[in-house]
Image (cartoon, rainbow, N blue to C red; front, side, top):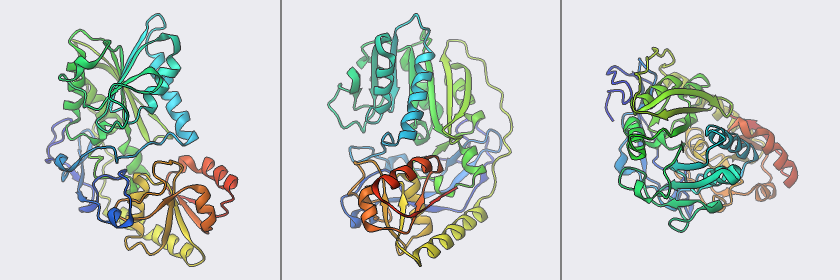
Amino acid sequence: MSDQCPICSERTPAVLDRPLEMPILMNRIYASAVEGRAAARGPLEFVACRRCGFTWNRAFNPALIVYNEEYENDQAYSPAFRAHMSARAKDVIDSVPSTEEISYLEVGCGQGRFLGEVARSAGDRLRAAEGFDPAWRGEEGVGPEGSRIYRRYFDIDTVSLLHHSPNVVATRHTIEHVQDPIAFLRAIREALGQRSQARIWVETPCVSWILRNRAMHDFFYEHCSLFTENALAYALAAAGFASPSVTHVFGGQYLWGTAVASENVEAMPLETSTEHAFLETVRKEFINRWKREMEDAANVGKVALWGAGAKGVSFSLLIDPEQKMIDHVIDVNPGKQGHYLPGSGLRVISPRESAERRPGTVFVMNPNYLEEISETAQEVGLIARLVAID
C-alpha cells in the first residue's frame, strides 16, 4: 500500500508508529508450539489520513494472506458476543419492510454463525440466506439453518451462484482485511446489479476507539484497513450506496454502517479528522505498564491470558516476547483448544484445564467479556485474579 489514502486520496498521512513485526494471520491455529513460533510475520507500519482519519498498514502485502480451513476466528462461544450477533441480526431483519420476504446475502460469512442467526431469526419471512467465504470448512453450497455457503469470494463472477437476488446484504469483519476497501464495496454493488435497491450492512473495528483507548494490542497485520465513522460513510457512498449511516456497537469497539444500493448517489462531505497521533511513546508506555504488571504477577504465581484471538496473540508478543512469564492461554472456543498461538507458540486450553493448572493471575484481553469470564471461572473452580486490559 502507498502513502495515498485509499478512501479520499489525501497524500500526506500521519505516521502512527515505527515499524513492528507481527504474525501475518493472527487467528490461524497451529498443531505444535514449534509451528506456532515459526508462523510467518509481516511488518506493521500504520499511517493515518489527516483528512478522513482512515488508517492503513502501508507495508501490507496481500500476496502473503491465504485464508483456509486452518483459520479459526469463531467468537460465538461467548454469550456476550452471541447477544451482540443477535442484536445485529435483528437490525438486518428489521431493515427489510415487514411486507417483504428476506433474501439475505453475507459476504465473508466465515463458518456461517451470523448467517445462521439471520436465517433463524427471520423465520417464515426468509426466502433465502446465502454466503460466500473462501475459508468455509463445510460442504460446498450447504450452510446452517437451510442456508447456502460457497467457498468463493463474492463478485461479478460468482453472483450467478445466488438462487435469489438479495434485498439485504451484510459483510462483517471482512473489509478491514481488504487493501482497497472501496473496490471491495464497489464489487458488491456491481454484482447486485444496476437496479438493485438492496440495503447493505458493514461491521468493522473502529480505529477511533483504538486510538482513544491506546489499545496497542489492537493493531494487526491482516487488519490492513481501519475506519473512522466518517471514512466508512464516505467509502459506502463512493462505492455506489446512498444515504450512509454509521453507528457504534459492542461497547464502541465496532462501527456498524448501513446504506442502500442506488443509481443516484450524492457525494459525501468529509470532516477533517483530528484523532491521529504519534503513538510510539504511547506504545512504549503500554508495554512498560503491562510488563511491570505481568512481572509482578509472575513473581507470585502462574500467569495466563484469557482470549486466544488476535488481541491475545498481539499482547503476548508485545509484553512477553521471550515467552518467559505466560504459562498458557484460555479460550472457550473448542476449535482453538489444544492448539498453539502464532508467534509465541503458547498453548491454548479450556477454562477447566486452566483451573487444574492454578494460575494466580489471568489477564483478560477484552473488557467486554470480563463479567462472563468471571462467571465461567467460578463455575470451573478457577480461582485467580482477573485483570482486564483496558
